[in-house]
Image 1 (tube, one colour):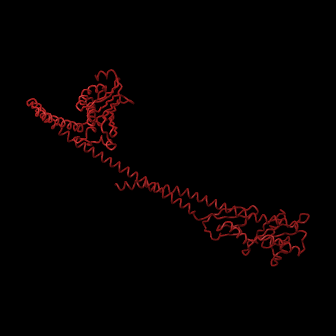
Image 2 (cartoon, helix red, strand yellow; image 1 turned 180 degrees about the vertical axis):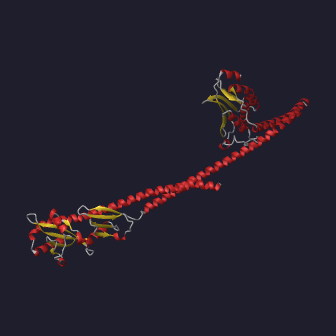
Image 3 (cartoon, one colour; image 1 turned 30 degrees about the horizontal axis):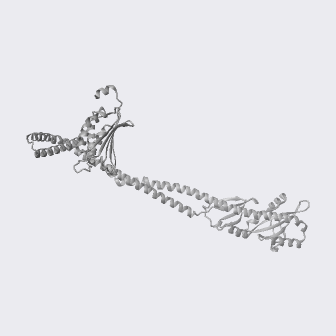
Length: 505
């Protein structure tokens, strides 16, 4: 059962929090990873998008500018070939440059092998004629797997703004791939037309079916650039997760250890209290059955000793009789303490003025002070201090406490007794100037059977505390080594009524 309890505690304090925190950490980190992947793909896509748009835009503007001055070269083969070669040499991104007629067929260009080839579709020709701007060629030409370039052409307009041919430049895809790889190495991307014809592809064939892509439309042409999100986890992020899991486990394990230590201490304290209670119950049961049998013969012995005292007045005999009487009184006192343990405390409480109880005790205390060769200082307030208690028991507690103070001091020292009220409590302070107690001893003085005296039972202060608590009060002890000890008895104040006042008297 104990092992099952420990396992349940470990499960609740260590395992479950570790699982819950790990799930929370993982979800947070997964969101962070997804965000990081998205941001990385968006950054790469923006770089690629800007470069591709720049290449297409610059080519368009250049061809439009050149087409304005090319109309005068129409039908002059040598001049047009010279112009084509000059255009090709001015930009390394161009594969070839051609002069194309209104049917989309090349008439001249930098590569004679492709003369009289069908290079532009009619749909693209119509678009260029309508807009009178440079256009990126699409259609069947791009669907040829052997092609490693795409074309941009601009209409050649006469003075009436009518097209009578086209200036076409082919952009090298291989060169673009090299530039893109240099910009961001190992990044997967693909460039497709609106008809899903693949124009450009880098590392796209090595991606898995679960790969996610981010699309970026180009501003210069109706194509879509797609960039793959990274598939691999960031190593630093994973290390952070593992560190968080480790520290969570360490922290929860420390909490578990502390809780287990607390439970062990509480159980030990409970067992100690149970043992002490069993000891008290046992002593109480023993006292209840034997105390009266002890007291009866003691009374007879005490009476006989008193007769012997009267019969033998010799000084030495009187000394022996006095010793015997003191020992009988000590035995009687011990038996009385056991009787208090063995029977329930009296609850027949009455209302008394603490000052009247102290007044009755004052002669006895001063007599004891003379016996110990000490002084007593009294500080008693003038107003009545009403409490509810059993007079004889409160007297016994005060006398026991005063006697302990006398026994702790040396000849000629002074014991102080102060009676007052504070915060709805009647207070009785008994202050001695003895050797005092250390913190360890203070914590044990009210434990049963604990005593620092050679002949003590260790029940005196325990019984005092039990009686005071039956009055709904408390008894406290403060002490400093070599300075002295203060015992404070606190009892709840009672508001007196005339009838109860007369009853008390």
